[in-house]
Length: 348
Image 1 (cartoon, rainbow, N blue to C red):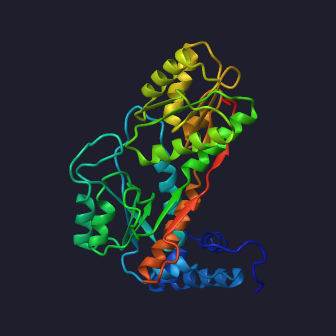
Image 2 (cartoon, helix red, strand yellow):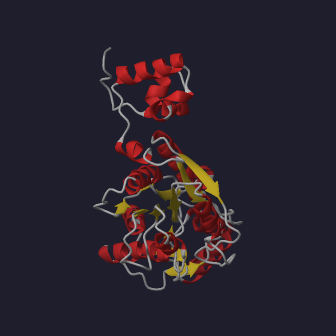
């Protein structure tokens, strides 16, 4: 049969050509005894015609038995527009599926976030799954100050990869993937400077947020790089629309910025509320930029310019690292920092 001459075929490509689901292709590769002979033959013909071979992550992941990756999910917080984890979860599910894996979601009795303590046992769900050997590995997404999950999993020799840097333990050796928040904010500053703005305010999170301070550093360094002052042009608070509104109103009254760059789309939504109350039009009178490129940023009038994290690439990198961990292969580069992009809309 003729070989596929376009882009490298994927598990999804094989499924389309064979007229079956991705799970059926995965079964053909991993558990062929589960398929009827005629279905198995059809999938094998598609694999041969396309010249498909499972990627290294898939081969590595198939060395384990449950084919499940555990990921803890926390309740959504009221008053925020942040659905970054929803987009990341979808990307992780797709990447895991291509590697012959599935994602198992679980929750804990209590959970902790960067701003507020909501519970007391952030490792309860992990302990239950480890005890029952229900999963082969974990993806950890909570890497804020004081979070015990990474250290707890390492002490039990449980394979995992973190989405987020080991902020308070720089010497940690576990693999992680993160997005360069400072670089993303620098893109935003360069963008509004190009449009003639010089009084650019920063609206961010509290000092105890490593992620927030990392993003703020992008504002400070880029502003100074352009020869611009940051004096009295910043505010810190919680990740809520209400805080963004209060901070913007205060800065507008005292410092008269011509642009706002925000730590998140949630905070930026608050800034937009403040501009409406002040009879100022975003994009015409004052520029506004958020961070995360949420669904809200895409639909709110007039459209919010926002830093977009490459979550699809993050998910692929995490799955590849999980494959290396589960096959006990050395990981030459345990930390991978990816670059975001800027999605420009009418607010700036």
